[in-house]
Length: 368
Ligand code: AVI
Image (cartoon, rainbow, N blue to C red; front, side, top):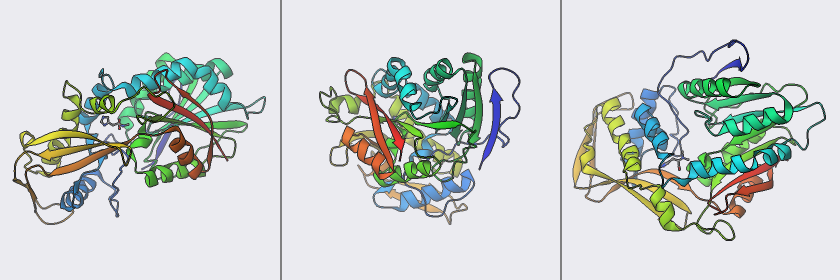
């Protein structure tokens, strides 16, 4: 899956993303060995493999159907979910310095091009794009995402609000595909991987995602990485485990609805007979792995059925009371862990910005 189109903020779109809109397939933490190319087959295989495993698992990409994407948008505005607004506040306070630092290796005539992995609707990126236009007059922005719907929304927002940006959308799964960068002469690339998305990968997969990105960059290009900090993540950190847990188990029940929606999706897309009333949302802090885990806990002993599909014959899944399906990991980092992850992918951390409470870090790294 790969499509690209260039759209300027002044004038008419010269091309639009070409493939039809379909369900979103975000990156997976528990990637199946053989990757089906269509979403229906991928869901069928994911459910069969994950729900037959011990312990049971389901990949977090299953969260992001239309209802799940809307619930995630709501999560980002919850009082308990500090991540999104904190990262935005770091951009608002430091955008000028971030862009100056990234442009340091730039020749006098050159400009920075910004690419963004998993751009989604690019709501926070506008702050950085506006600053890039202020510093260099114009900017080319290349958002990469599996969701054409999200990219179309991102493009509309940016073109109507930030004059001077040329948007080149790229529909691709950056966890599985190379990212042809179409580098312009005399430019350097600043890659954005923000929103703590890296935290949803195991440490090995996180390193591989960054290595894949590094392979597309030239020495001197830069990466801006957004990471959520662990309770002991930085000197003077003002974060408690309780704060972390609340961010993943809010009082309004939005995160619970987001987690349970995965069962609704399997019921709808596979004809399964999950009753969401028989499951409850669980979030826990795993200090050994430095991650928040989300699970769906079976309230009673029960059986769930999935009819035969492209992945195999009909499946009966037995749940003991209290047994869980592990649906997501959200890793939290110390500043040292961020530095060593970057090193492992052949980047060198050059500067890091945090909010005054040290909840979240935005790190600029140079490709070696
Ligand atoms: C997308 N990702 C960075 C979110 C996170 O915080 O790990 C997903 C999420 N899961 C529950 N709440 C938000």
